[in-house]
Image (cartoon, rainbow, N blue to C red; front, side, top):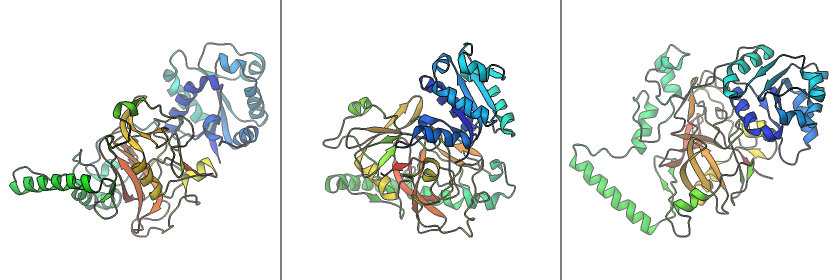
Length: 431
């Protein structure tokens, strides 16, 4: 796998490394970070050498901890012998010592202390120069979808683009302008009945409530199907034998890469492209193994809406981004595995390290955090912190669509979605 930047660091500076890596990857720089990118069971030294060979440059995160580490001396030596550009980002006012002084003192460096974020712009600019390209600015989340397709910033033929790429709005909390048949049909399926000014609507609402109560009494474990293949799999916390809301809140979120929730597969502790549980990571079109700047049918690698390639289900195939990025054993979850996650786990809307999303607690008491990562349409990210959308590897019977799991703060469901939209991926691991 090719990387733009190999990050050399001391494990004691993990928090700072995560911040730097997050910023660079938001600028579309592919980073190698050992604690994230070396799969368990792999020989550490072999993976380090392979990553160095396949990286365009090295970024040293320099500190007093780094000065005391001998392991990093070998990394710097190899990068230097291979003639790779080396950029040093000092996160502490510390002099170079030992081998670091030999390799790094005569190379220009960036000072990013006492506030590391103040050095991000200079870091981005210098990494871009060494890579030989201008880096994209980090994407700013925008919670208001474009009303007219020219807001996408890439096309001047609105109608065609709207009908091709507008993602379905499955949740009724927002009421964006209806600009496509896709949006309209989705709202018809899941929007609550509008009772304003209509006695008939009020009676209908009452009837639906009574039917819902009857269903809870008679068939508490049944999955209710709405709108064809879409399934509302919302989980409540007040069922017998389940943890209370207070008990759920006390369960710690796992920060490991592989998390056993007591299900048929293990789940990743963070999104593909992220280094921490609350990170959104990268966005992917379905069946594409790399992230990109723009998501629509014009940039989709498997055809367009009129002639979309049918590749079938893609978990653990050449079309699986999780397998391509993290290696053997990792893959996209299939539709049944996300349904299992919804049905057998308890879900609690939470805020973790400042990010909204769901704490998902498995039958064995372990927990992961799924951030409300939003979606990427065109070149803009929407609904971060409000909605979460994650691809499965299961294709829909309609060749232009595949299944995803989606949620907001009250609803979780599995539904089909257009393949060209950019969603997050939460991989699963199977030994």
